Length: 70
Image (cartoon, rainbow, N blue to C red):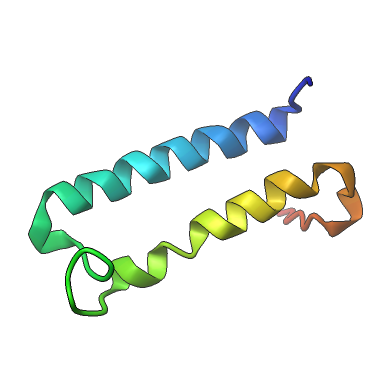
């Protein structure tokens, strides 16, 4: 299975986002639910992972993908 350039960039972005969120969790005062009992912007930023997963899994149906152009 060969990945396109866009898919490679998506995997890179996912990796960077994951490392960033792990950093916030390790610095306990910078995270939120599900690691702390309060909702914070951190909680809402976790929505990016299902979005990345949906984009990556829709690779066989390119018409589902959304491309932004300048």
